[in-house]
Length: 176
Image (cartoon, rainbow, N blue to C red; front, side, top):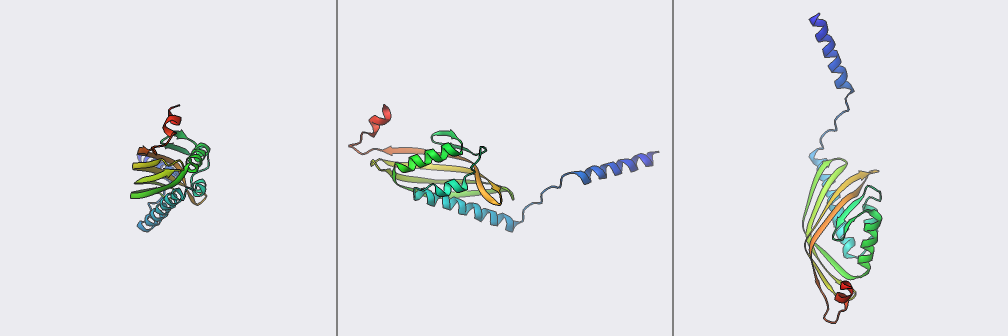
């Protein structure tokens, strides 16, 4: 009786194990390196697009979905609001220049990666105000969607410094 019980138990355990979802195999070092290069390229393209005051690349690389979430200097927003606010801000700028200090990439699996950008930015508005973003940080969670990397979440923060031209009425406009 004990032999039958243990035999049935072994069969039952084997059946359960064989029906379990297969676990995803760990990425090889080469696969991780390829993903890291892809993520670093996305980061470079984001900085280049920002420096060109263009959101065309942003519209392509950010996940255009209700699942997208952005946290930045202005608050929390979804895709449409984030794009609209970025377009509006860039339309007031004469120039902006992001400089990278550090980019860190962590690969979770073949479909998920995380990147942190640390740097600074300088800019000038069309009104002549100068802007410094010191200790600028952007963190991004990327997901592979339809075989393309998309940014599903971003968080941006910086120490922002504004230098107004001496003849500017911008301070009074902001205070109203």
